[in-house]
Length: 335
Ligand SMILES: Nc1ncnc2c1ncn2[C@@H]1O[C@H](COP(=O)(O)OP(=O)(O)OP(=O)(O)O)[C@@H](O)[C@H]1O
Ligand SMILES: [Mg+2]
Image (tube, rainbow, N blue to C red; front, side):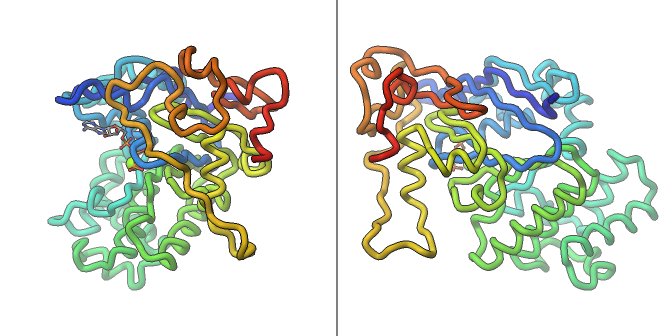
């Protein structure tokens, strides 16, 4: 099957006073049409930077995409200038983003109508009347009451949850092929979070788009994503179907992440187990596996060799771990 988006060996780095930060270090992944994929990992592991790289929204300097390919609709997006016409016609039109904080995407001094119609006029070449009609329709679709009146309001006149609905409408208004939702609901209360995730899922399905949900919440991906990529310290360390990753997580980090999710039917005796240690600092990171200082299953080899390559263990289930890929059973998952 041909991928909608293929990221190959992406490397994005930041030059900081403390040293070189390899925020995204040789990351490869694929997204197919009409699927929902989860990108998970602890804070600071490179989830957002990897997605901003796809949109070429890395501030240079201090950041720079130093290698890789991002193939979308047959073109390598990295061959295009970040602010050139090609990227401008893709960003917000074919690939759209829903950010954690709605005001990142909304302009406080423009009415919703102006913001929505601007995108429609630019990307879909609609005239003023048609674009206003479409803007109202989009606001209705995301559940804004009295959309035909509220379209003339400013973002501050909406609550946080409503603003995020507006952002969802903006993201989908030009019928993009790919939506990147980066922690789309974390700043909101739990009930609103659940409603908005349902809304995003339904909208993406109706618009026949592909969705990447970026989150540190495995509960969210379990519910919505068909496939998962797990990131750690700038790399993908495990990938597979959601079913398979929950049934048999391989990487000790993924095993740890799964033990941290509270379950409704949790036995009182079963405690949530935090992953010991701190996430690694990405500045001047050693070449060995970044999980080594926190790993309870490490081998001698892990201390000497460079970071293990992502290797297919089972059908479409990949892991980057010497202990998981050695010949004899590692017993990792029984711990
Ligand atoms: N503008 C910048 N300058 C320097 N370093 C940066 C910059 N932006 C990101 N980084 C570094 O890149 C790394 C990855 O950051 P990123 O924002 O992708 O993490 P994340 O996985 O999205 O975390 P979170 O879950 O907190 O959103 C971090 O170490 C961060 O400090
Ligand atoms: Mg982030």
